[in-house]
Image (tube, rainbow, N blue to C red; front, side):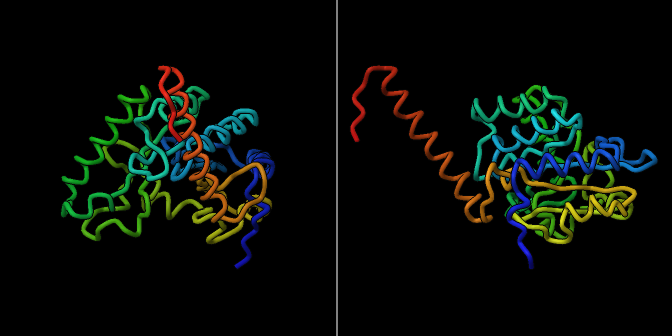
Length: 248
């Protein structure tokens, strides 16, 4: 496997968007049945909402819109924090769609049936909509291989939200993903330059796309260390603000 570490930079991301927009029309998941050369450009925010905001800015600068799927159970960020909530709001204000990235594995002790699954989805959807103040208009599974076998993964919609894992999308769209910080199936630049897919779904995880080339492990460390440093700063600032001694 060739990791193509140099691919995962902000500069290359902009180049990829420029190639893609010349050959496909970027559409929302609600438009997945429209005819023509269309692209579902999707982000699963597993690691970093800050990185998601940066990619969202690049896309707007290039005149395209994407769909950003928020993961309520991410161990790397907390949607209930002011800063994270405000970043998601900012992404939405740029004109991007917000979706729910649903981790069925989080409930693996609850013996979910289809009705139970829909209840959990409804709770998470309503929570994000209330918190962020924008509608959740699309759905994706986090780690779909871990969804219990008794649940329907490939329904076209989940609670009225278009499902990125639907059988229709899988059967009618080419697919390219950067899961785990490398190209699991096909390299995105190759896919875009060849332009063979009439209809294409592109999945990126914003935490992988950074200013300078790094290995996937170092990109993970960047997320963790950056968050830790910010929490230290918040602690120090809080004590300074109220005039208390900061014992170190």
